[in-house]
Length: 356
Ligand code: PEP
Ligand code: MN
Image 1: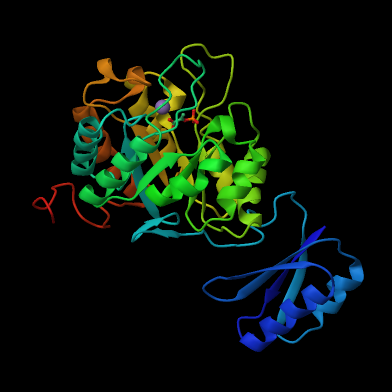
Image 2: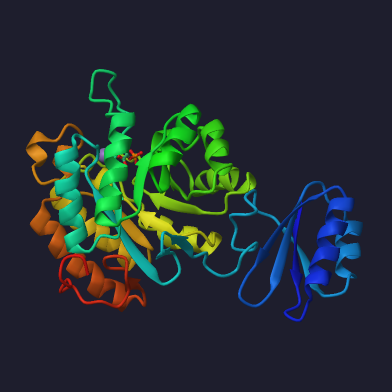
């Protein structure tokens, strides 16, 4: 059983410290957090009714409540307002919509730079590219590994875009940390608790994709693994689940977006590409996610998908990606969100001169 102590908005730093010290004395682990208006202190560990009563009497405490969900730090009860991450100056979550785009895998320097340039021109704010690919077949292209990471870092620097790449093995976390700005934990690794704990010890954001047959609560528990290690920078991603529908690779669970947002303060993205499996369906699913209130989408784009080494059939073509970005901009405004374009908000789709 775990509790949260909500402090009065007038509580002083000393009041907060007194409560935190008392929580430690009581044998619980404190997790302080500050919203715009007040401090909240989570306390995890065995709790008795007396503990709740004792904490309630300390100065500056407004109330003490129990968190009944199995996920604590990920829950809305712990942090009532949306978490907004700052990733190299780009704000993710809250009212901000961001599009992550790029090829499925980093195939070569030329292709990553070419695709990177075109997604940046279309307004994407974060560059994706896999260096370690978790493939269903051991005979399929497994990614360029370290060489791919180096290319990704160079492309991110050249294009002035934060980068995201998948890490599949806890032993690679340190290396990936050196080259990318966001760790991606893939659907197949959502239950890899050692990996989640390892990225949880780092200070870079972690983008966790929902497992192929994982419940919402299980996805939030995976986020909890990362948060419990001290890394509070987590993004959740609905990427389609296994159903009986045969027309698509996976079924994008659009309802997961509002459900996750109701239960958690963490940013929620959708991945229309891996859900659809076919490029023609990707724009509709991306728009469905944004309409449902998602904080962004991760979209696979390729300039020559018939030559792609991974996921070519679902890669959106450059012109269609540009059109999709225009639609996402309009739709974001309709639902009260703002699309970040080229790392900035409130700019129109007429891109300023290159370098601007
Ligand atoms: C990917 O993003 O390239 C990927 C493999 O996604 P997922 O883990 O959702 O299948
Ligand atoms: Mn892919």
